[in-house]
Image (cartoon, rainbow, N blue to C red; front, side, top):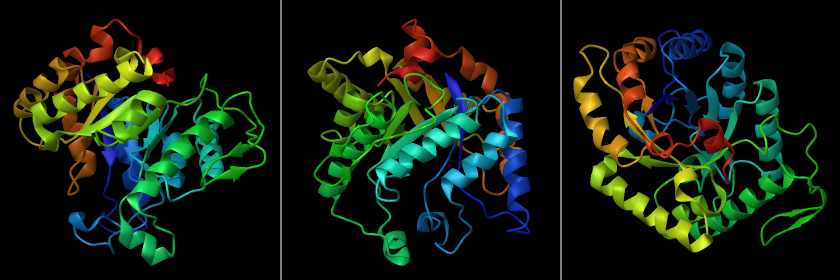
Length: 308
């Protein structure tokens, strides 16, 4: 099982002047312990569940550009891009730029968006959920077209592009990996089966809940003729406390590895994010020994990155 980190908190002592150093130290520590994936949230206001919407929050893709310059190997993505936040053509260009400047390490993580307060706060339209899902599917189609040899028009219900030109092309072939976040059984997981190379589910569901979502995804793959084994399965979880041996965390991860989860993406502690990341060194080797779905099936990581 691979290990990723998900940065959700930029409220550090001395902010804002200390944020850059804190993020740089965090991602350097992550690469030191073998983290293979680094992600950030896509929000303009901090989530209220984290404390306050007025807490520090950075724009995601600008942050990933900085992280790209501070790292060498880890894959970089947003977990996940809100479909309402950027025009699809611009989004494809942004992810392409990150891929080129990072040496082929970008990932498109995307979802239907949900945080109405920040939309209203900054004057961004927030359509009903059914329309957001329509826009999500059109956005996936547009990104794939811009990353293909087809540079002609795109005509959808919500988006109309006269010229899907994207130069330079991404370094990764055939395109940067696509991850769709969320566990909606009728829409989200159907889109994963149809378009994505990876899914992301929540450990709050528990092993039984995650297993159910994977069964639903498997069913959607059968309907669209997709090889379920080639979709990377990821979960997001709170990491082990900075102190302790990490045994409880490893025990928690065992059933997920057994059901075929390929990667756990861990949220570092907000009080000491660098120490929290370094503390994961205690569990990284054992996680690497747990067999997720792609490795157990004999697929390489490269195959998982280019699926979809």
